[in-house]
Length: 235
Image (spheres, rainbow, N blue to C red):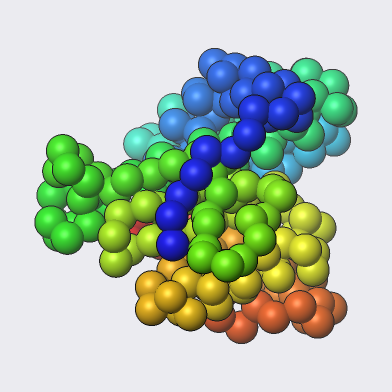
């Protein structure tokens, strides 16, 4: 089992520009420290129903109401709302691309926390600062045709390898994604390698469960991370 950079085709070049947008990095950094309710706020606001901040403050009284006035989370809630509305202002097509890039950037942020003090030396890279993490990487196996689409995030630390696909919402869960993740795990096992297959969906667990229930593709061994369990990525 080995990892390889994806070919820089036209799609990859365009998407690299989206990923490099400072708005993506800012949103991901804020969400990396957010609680589940703040993540729900971000998802709702970035879906574009309204660009009026007052609307969202009224819909999330626990984050912005009188009881939250003295909360240490208030500043983060305000910043998350601000950046979410900035994403909404980009327009439908660009907004879709930016949201996807944010989920990938957020996933990388959280995965890299695994190497912080107390995580264990076996899970760090050569510099001892965290796992070896890749973006837009393919996984190659002997005698197996390489997948066309790369994985959004990969953990390439020996013994802790992981293939991660990221989706903005439960609607992004489809047979192709599930088969690709399960096939990677199976091929790794055939080579006596351990590979965790993970699907990160920036949506509610219930929505993901409903979507998965309609899928016939194998997913029983795929780890599904949702808004409620994002912190598990750091473990």
